[in-house]
Image 1 (cartoon, one colour):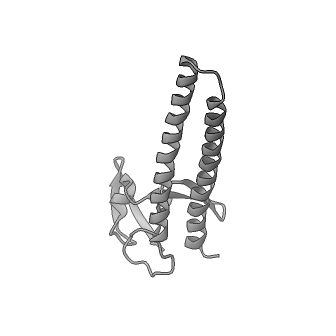
Image 2 (tube, rainbow, N blue to C red; image 1 turned 60 degrees about the vertical axis):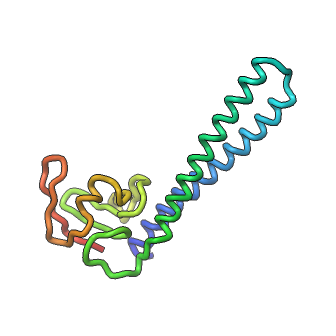
Length: 149
């Protein structure tokens, strides 16, 4: 499997895993809400229901965010030739490797680490539109772009 394909799969796996975990949490909260309904009436009962409903709202917001991440991943075409850095680019600098997609942590690649970052992150903003051989300043240091894939 090609490097960018594997990195994109890493990002999809991250989103899918989080989605499944949130769906399980939502189901558990719904079960808790249902059992809370059968519980005794009173202030304690109402407080318990309100807490569960707040948690459900938080989970719903997180699921909406995951849908947004899926939309970003769907826009990435790993087959297109790279010149200038853009969404879906793999970038190797003198200090690190990056995959511009979504922010989902460090992906292992042949014994190395590739950081999956969102296009909106500060370092991605500095990389966008640049090509191999160009430099950029980040955190007071000058970095050279060695490769773009």
